[in-house]
Length: 201
Image (cartoon, rainbow, N blue to C red; front, side, top):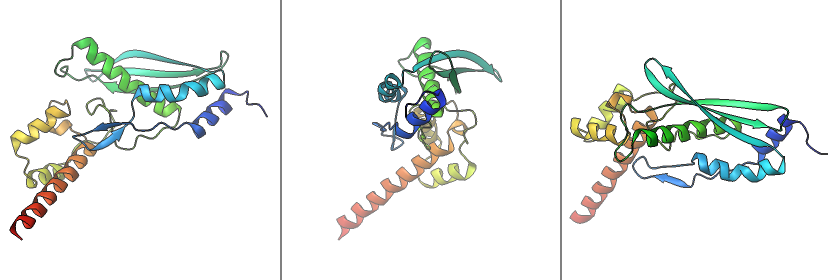
């Protein structure tokens, strides 16, 4: 039985599409997939079902902050399905990136999440660009900051952590990023303690 309805074709793609998280964030300790990874994996399926995928960007201003709104459009030439996602541009471009490159990075991140929504891909808590997160994402809590301080993160180290995640303030770090850092630091301390015990044995 041939599949002719665009929604049936999308369901078939969603059930079969697998995109490996082939990239790794060393600081956060997590794997992730990029927009390019998704496009590379889905193109053969689009060709099989005779579907076209369009990606469009718009600039939106929300509460005096600039966002890129990416829209993924799946079409068979007659019907279409649209999914959109927002990503916030950082207030300052990161090192060695000019404004156009920063916008391009933001666009790629927004497109990734639009594609995730369209093809029902779940990224969990990870992120390929920690600064360019959905507005709804939960931020670091006071309890997490207190925990980081107990683990040796003084003001200077917390500032370095914020710079790594390309945000202006420690309070702009996400809950997930803070959890990843806490887990990593606990592991570092545990390994150091083991080495110390072995040295005294």
